[in-house]
Structures are given as structure tokens and as C-alpha cells.
Image 1 (cartoon, rainbow, N blue to C red):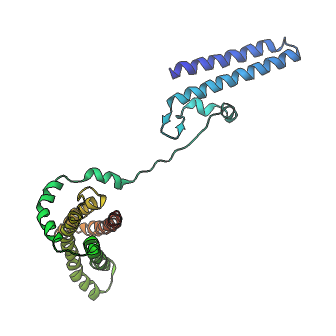
Image 2 (image 1 turned 60 degrees about the horizontal axis):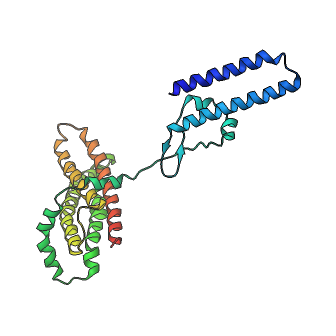
Image 3 (image 1 turned 180 degrees about the vertical axis):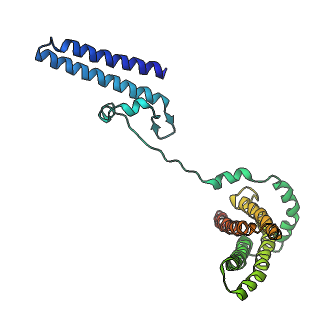
Length: 265
């Protein structure tokens, strides 16, 4: 269809040009002026029809109409486009990947709820202060993340970049202990978070905070296994460092999402 329209418009413009040149010599100045006006108007009509033809292939959303790119549109003069009243707009789309994490929520919430339900009911009988139930888990996990995780990460960089043999030896001894402890308390804290949500009658796996926590624990498991493979493949040390930095970044996002979740109810 587009090819037929292009052919038609090309033939029409060519015919108009030949007709104009053929009769220009026999026209009086007044008649020639009238003919030039008609020819210009005909060209504008063809240009407008081309532009409107291209608007058929538009990408539509609720607020914008963006003409699809086409060679014919690029050939249309800017003046003709303005005269036709057409707009050229560029849309920049972005997305938040965290919203897609909701689709990654693991099944089994009912199973976990049934396992932790009796303990959650027992906690309710303790009549603990609401602020403690609400913010106890976030407070404990923040200490683990910034104290153990933060200092453990610093020691990891000292192992890689320090030239002091004694400092490097101490860092090699303390680094795995701190981050191993962080892994343990994060896994233990996950049960506390589930209990806190159940005590407050909230869903447990339907938030980005829960999903990032599950992903973080899975990555920590892989990070714990990597050092056992260093002797056979020294290049894994770089992977270990990069993955560790990524995990810490993920847990910072996880903490921000947890704060958002805590403020939501």
C-alpha cells in the first residue's frame, strides 16, 4: 500500500512539473502567476497527504501520537509539516525493575504461614509493645547489615588492595567470620521478619522487600561456596569481590524497601 502511494505521488508531482514547464512559455505573466500558485498548492496537498498517510502507522498511547519514521516523511519540508499542523514528538520510556519482582514471588506462602502461624499466635500472647513488633526486625537487620556487612566488605577490599602483610593476614582471618555471621543472622532474621508480618496480619511474600531478601540469601549462599574453589581457579577471586559488592548493593536496596514497607502500615 505504501509503495502504491509513493508511486502515485511521484507520478503526480512529475506530471505537474512537466505540465507546468510545457505551458509556461505560452502563458501571460498574469496567467503564469496563477499557474504557479496552483502548482504550489498542489505540491502542498501532496505533501500533506504523504504526512497524513504516515500518521496511519503511529504508535499510540494514552497521551501521545508519535508518527512512525518513514523515508517520505524525512523528505517533506519542515514548512510543509508546520503548514499541515503536524507535530513531531519523541517519547522516552523508562521502567522500574522492582515492580517486575512481584512476578518472581515464590509460591508456598500458605505453607510458610501454616508453619509460622502457631509461633506468631504465641508472640501475640506476649503483649509486646507495637513499636517493638513493628520495628524490632528492621532495627536488628540494620545493625547486622552496616556493622558486620559494612566492615566485612571493607576487610575484603583490604585483602585485595593492601600491601601490608600483617593487615592482610588479619583481614583474611576476620573477613569470612564477619560475613559468615552476617549470612547466619540474615537467615535467622528472615524468620523474624516473617513472624513480624504474620503477627501484624500482613502478607509475607507479596512485597519487593521479601523478594529481594530471598534473592539476597540465594546469592549469599553462592558467595559462601566460591572461596572453596579459589585454589583450582584463582580468577574466581575477582568474581567473589564483584559479586560481594553487588550483594551489598542489593541489601541496601532491600533495606530501603523494608523501610518503605514498615511505613506503609
